[in-house]
Image (cartoon, rainbow, N blue to C red):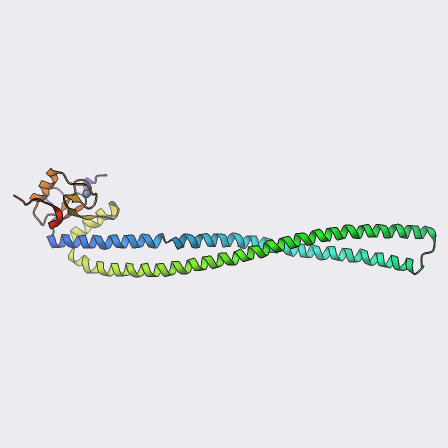
Length: 264
Ligand SMILES: [Zn+2]
């Protein structure tokens, strides 16, 4: 996109001492370094790793809570089933005791008691089957709970390690960024305010690069080789003119490496 509004009128190009223009390249290099460091800081793999481990931890934590409730319920159910079995067994033993003690003599009562004892025995078998089934479910659920707890501990450790690694890397990158900012402070006073303002404006609208070296007739910003007419205009321009790339609009800084023919 061409932004003609940003271009100074041809007849009044922005002026800046060639040394100041060179300092602008130093500034650009520092800003590019800072951008790279900031990008690395924002996109540390440990950030995603930590988020993933924390999400896993939350999922497992919920599963643990649900399974712990299920284990409690099944434990209570098993106790109840056990109590039921014991109650019926006690009744059977009482009846059996009465029969064994010869307290039941009437044949009709004896028949009834025998029938009842058989019925109690069947009831006990059913209740014991039910209790066994509850115990199996309890064992299975407890196994799942133990498993989830192990994974939960692992996820917690993983999130912790990622957080620690992230912290360590962030601290290092922030240190580097402070270093770059310190260097920047040394460079900024060497760049005139109007040139700096133009550079900042271009940097904001052109992916972080506002100024580039003209090297072997090529713009260091857009990497395009300048055509003869543009080169001729640049050659003619006084060395304190701030020249711009006709293609991308960035500030072009001329040096001995620029590959310019000598002005006539
Ligand atoms: Zn360019």
